[in-house]
Length: 229
Image (cartoon, rainbow, N blue to C red):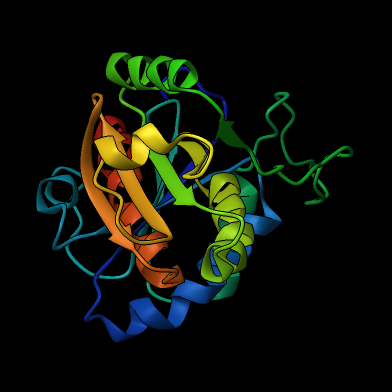
């Protein structure tokens, strides 16, 4: 992350914090509006060491990073101020920055969903090996075409791949790669698992959007935010 030109905005929050819940929908909206900025959420109760190392003393706190270095901070729930600061530090992936007139550069594109479909054991082993060699989270959706809840949550899973671009999102059809369902004890669908270092570290059963996003953010933020502070 230190070599990336993209800015990073981290939302330090807590589940019991009313103002945090109030600003959360706006934070999600802004993540779609400014696709070249990396948006992270850190639960201060679950990642106390990260919050402490970043000097967070109140919530919500938003910190901005460029090249791995903190360059700005905002406290409170002023949506307009938050967007203004995001815009101030906004940088296109191609290296363009916001112009003096405050307008976004031409050619701004939304991130496209990127979900890898696993079709063989060999492909899975390759993905698992890559996971062992990196600090990226590998998020796996075990599903089936006949499973209605699986189909209903599929677009949201793709949306998460846009919001958390540094994670690897994978979809496994349990009817096509049956060996993986036995290996990882998949007994109900949909089933989501997070891998780090080649090992399953978290899982969720059911098409629960909030819980799925929370699980992804928890493991995504732990690796990326800690590297920034």
